Image (cartoon, rainbow, N blue to C red; front, top):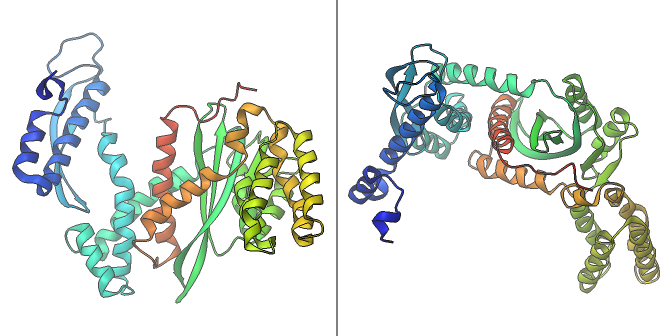
Length: 387
């Protein structure tokens, strides 16, 4: 088979790339998104252009030009229209939501006079042109309405609940502070992950975690059978107060990291890590507890502090054994929250300092909303039918 026979990239795109190289990137994006939007309209109408079919749900009505400011400059799209006026292509809207949030977060620094020359330069490069305070205000209001509706949407039964927090630098009342971003992810009856909620607070104190968890319950969260998280003191107390009787799985990954604080000599770390891993990989809870007793006895004389910590803390990571073995790999750690946190960090490190809490909440919410939508359209995360 020749290259030409196997190639599925439109000839128009290849010719543009050949002629313009990397400088042609905006044009390539324009062509691809325009084609994706046309396909969306066809799917929405149930018919291709000029096609006569009884399945048709409406009629095309030309195109409306729309100029979007992106990190690679301005791109002019042709947005397909329908006569009924109930269509807007997700190919454009979803892809630009977090882009707008990032733009506004940087633009607010510039507008409010708290930015450095470097941040102003980044804003100019990101937006393509200068951003006025009026433009920021109008865009922020529209985006905030969408994000608030998502943050307060109704919830239902969630079988497995994951909780975590990360920190971002935010200017609050003239001072730079570490604001805690509280996050909740759940796996429901549809067997897929979804971001349940996010909140920007001044700390991980019990009052903030309790307020956040109460908001999830007020929105309809119910049926939780297991909570997986690290051992945050404020979260522990809030969880015990609001989810009384719900089992808790302490993240095994974090437990192994915490153990290093009690290892008296560096050369012992690999051995201790292997011993703890052996406990976690036991075939059942009874055998895990046998392994734990053996490990505690092993270090009772040479590392008494470690032995005491193992005896108290490791059982908190064994709750997973009380659930179907087919679920263990997904619920034994909060690693999915760690990956989510890293995705946020990758985008927020460009900003470094948010001018206010609203700016931070806006960007993080947009990123999490986009990720959650991706999860909900992906394959199942955990087969709740397995044992």
